[in-house]
Structure formats: C-alpha cells, structure tokens
Image (cartoon, rainbow, N blue to C red; front, top):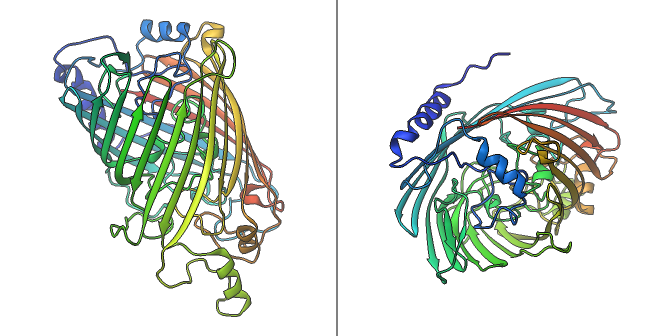
Length: 488
C-alpha cells in the first residue's frame, strides 16, 4: 500500500540530499549501523568490539554504504535523517471482558510513521550544538492501550496530542578532556567527534531523551533495526522522566574512563501521568538518575558490559493504597489514582543491564528492573518489576554482515497494591480492563532485519503475549509486524 509522505518528511529528504553540499569535505558514508549497535544509542567512544560489532561486520559496513546520502566525517556541520514505518496486526483473541483501555479483542491493524531530522554544529573542538526535529503520524494497535509491554516503541502514548512536527532534542554538549589519548567514536546525533579523549567529562544541557544515555544496550535498545517492544528495548520498571513523546529537559554530567563510566542527570517531570507539559517548578517535581557502567566481559577474550542504574522521581503522584481505601470507604465510585490534593511524592527504582559478546557475531543481553510500586506509574509504562533476556545474531554468519536476527523474552509484573487497584476497576494511564485475574505479562519477540540497499532496511517481527495487561482472562495474542527503515 502506497504511503503518502507529509511535507515534513519531504523536507527531511531534501535537507539530507543537500547534506553533501553543506559538508566541506566528503568521506565514505559512516552513519553507523553495526551488527548489534543501535542508531539510538549515545556516542560512547567505544571501539566496534566494545559496541558489539565484529570485525567482519565493520568490514561489511565500510564496503557497503549504509545511508542513502553520503556524510562528511570532517565538516563542522552534521545533517542526517531517518524514517521508520512499522505496520502491526493481531487476529481476534479470547477475552472474558474488556474495559476502556484494553487491548482490542477483535482483529485490528495499524501503521505508525516516524520522521526525524538531525542537525549538529561543532562550535569548537569540544563544544557542540545538537538539534532534532521529529514528526509522528499514524498510530498503533488499540491506540497504545492494554499492554504494559506495548508492541511498538515508536507509538506516542497519547493519541490525542498534536501531529505537528516538534523539537525532540536540543542540547549543548561540552567535552572536557583528561587525557591526550584518543579513541575512535562514531559520529551521530549525540556527538560529532570521530574520536574522543579516553578519559573525559561530558556535560549536556537542554532537551533530550534519558534513554539515550541510561539503560542503553547494544543488542536490546533499537526499535529501528532490532526489537520493537517497549519492555524488550528498555527496562519497563525504569519510569524515567519524560513527556508523552519520551523527552525531558535537564542537565547531564558523565565521566568516562577506559573501561568504566558513571553518569548523572537531573530532569523535569510531566505535570500529570503521561502528560505533554513539564512541571517547571522543581520544588514540585524533578528526577534524579544515576548509572555506573563497567565495560568488561564475563566470557574470556570477549567484550561485555554491565550497567547499574538507580533513579528517584518526585512528582504529584498518587498512592495505590490510598486510592483503594478511598474507594472502599465510598469516597469515589471506583479507585481513582488521581483523586488526591496537590502533593509531592517520591518513587524510586533500580536496574541491572548486561550485554555479552558470545562469539564474533552473537551478542546476548539481559535486564532486571524494579521500582517500589507504591506510587502510580507516571511516565513510561505500568511495570513495577521486569526480567528480560535475548540474543542478536549478526548476518556475518551467513555472509550478510548488515543483516541481523534476534529472539528475546520478557516477563513483567506489578506490585500487590497496583494489581488490587486494577482488579477493583481502577485505571492507569495505559491499563483498564475493568477487572483483573492477575498473571505476569509474558512476551516473546523475534525479528529478522535485512539490509536491502544502502540506507534501506526491511524487517519482519513476531510477538506473542501471554496475559496482556497482566490479565489471565484475556489472550494470549500474536502480533506480527513489518518495518521499513531509511537512514538518510
């Protein structure tokens, strides 16, 4: 089916086409698409091996351009773009009942479209200005309701917000070197340098996505080329500060050494759960995020990484136990997590993120996430505990170095107070089945991505979900999908 590109998408194509003339010198295309690397991950300054790419994959990347238009490695300006189209469908599935925010038990399909324009300027050797403009259109199955581990990370979680282009990221990036030794770094939308000091401090201030820097994983954080599910691509229990579209405003400081790094961010929270507006009064709402990263493999002679995450959110969040008691006392017709005076409550959580190269072309990953589950899910999704794990196999094994195959499993859970709230008919910002026969939400996802030509990639994806929305009375459901991705 033909898809009509909106004016913004045509603008992205036009600007990307002009990129070669903007650049002072030309170099081979280098918008990195590694076998287990991600275009959405931060510019970490790691070698290809540390980022999960084998030598054969790097060779394949160098031999075959992976963007539609060439990009300079030396110009002060950076102009690039991406387009991501995801179509998903599910057949009808058994459901004893449904609510206002249930996954539709009838067969349905949906197409989402995401267009991004990246612009960067190297002000000095260590100072950069980075800017992204995005447009989303289309939608997802059931308008992103009814699942904690939703099937499409590109879908905006509030279908009523404007479809007009918006500023996704806009930040000042400053690097302070602490060594003369430099290591190779991929040039991307989070950093323009092709090499960075081995020891350095980086500062960022402005608008950004916390998931660009925290809980990143080379095998399990890329909805453009790899997995699509929210709780496979990210730690579902990490209720990170974000507006409806996934972005926040704040500051981040990061120290990087040869094999380890540590980062901290202070960020704004939305005014309401899943809201588009920020609470600018930081005495009422703010978020602290910290992560330690150790780049050392657990398998002899193989690269690996472990990341330890913690966060605390302060916002106008409701308490599940209070909402239940109000309902039982007859104060509300059903449990209502928003029925409380303006208040500042705290929600905290932790995460462990692992990745390991098992062979030159096979990378395994795993995550564990937990939050206290007492206060309402506010910014990401309705998960209080999660386990996930999977693998990504690079196509170098069958002489297609830019192809990849993956399979992963995720098990999500919620706290006792959260499940009682939903069972009594309460609604979260994603889940509302009217009742609940609780069971862990279990998700299996597998995909194959093929490099078709230059910056064009096509994927097939299949997800199987047991107990959608934690409800044994609904499902299971299969969700097949197709994806077309263009790196401009």
